Image 1 (tube, rainbow, N blue to C red):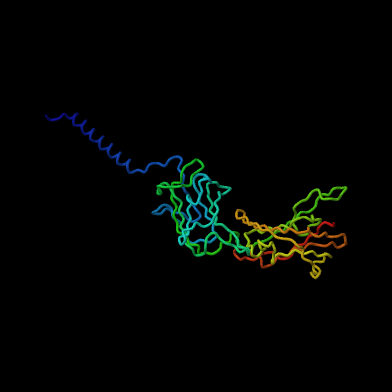
Image 2: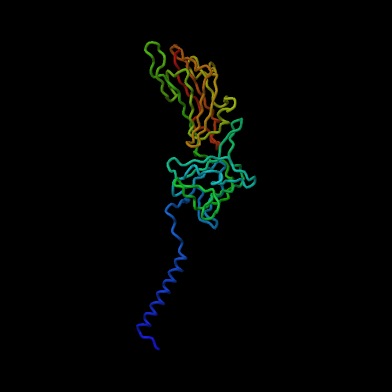
Length: 330
C-alpha cells in the first residue's frame, strides 16, 4: 500500500525532529560547561601571566633576588590557605624553598604578594631569600589541571581553578624598591609644656630635629630613610655602634669649630619595613643627651650622616651632613 500524502509528511517531520534533536545533543556535548558562580581564579600577575599549554605561564622569567610577585584573583584570597604548598617556590638546584613572606595587598584583598625574605648577617650585610643566578620553579596548583591540592582558596572557600607554572632565573641582581638616591629625616621629642611649679616636662611632641629647641634630654634621635637601606652602612646590628652616623655635643654652640665637639655615648637600633619601604634608625644616649646650659650661646647636639650611607642598590644618601638642635638647659 502506498502511504497517503499526510502520512508521508508526518513521517518526514518525525525524522527531521529526531535529526535536530541528535544535532542539538552533539552540539551540547561540544560546548564547554558554564563556570560555576563561585569560580575562583587568577586574573593577572606582575610576572606577565598568560595562557600556556600547562595553564598560565610567566612572560617575565629574569628576576631580581629581592623581587616581590603580585598575583591578582577575581575574589578576595583567604590568607589561611596560603602556604609553601599552595604557593610553591623551589630552588631547582637544591630543592629548597627560599625564605619568603606572604601578604595581602591592604588596598586589594584579591591580590596576594610574595616577598623574598630580607635578613642580615652579623655585619649588617643584606642576605636575600633568593640566591643570585639560581633557577626557581614557581607552581600555584589549580583544580582544572592539578588533581591534588592544596589550593589557594577564596574567602568563600572556592579553590583556585587556574594553574600557574613558571621557571624564573634570579639574574638581575638587587632591585631598587624606591628608585633614586635615598633621603633622611631626623626627629626628636621636644618639651612643649612644663609644670609651672617644678619646671618638669609634662607634655612632649615629636618635631623635626633641625633647629629644635628645648629637646627633652631623654629623647631618642630618630632617623627615617625613605628607602630600604643597607644596614652595613648605618650601624652594626650586634654592637649597636656606627662608623657612618655620629652624634656629638658642641658645648659652646659654635658648630663651625669642631675641635671642641665630644662624642655622646649611646647605641643604635635599626628596623627595615618592607611594607612601607622605610628604614628607621634610633639613637639612644646611654646617660641622656647633655644639657645645653644657660650660657648666652647654648650648647648643641650635632648629628652627622656620612655620604657613604647607601640603600640596598648602593645609591648613596642624597642629603648627608649635619643636623643640630638644642636640648633642655638642665
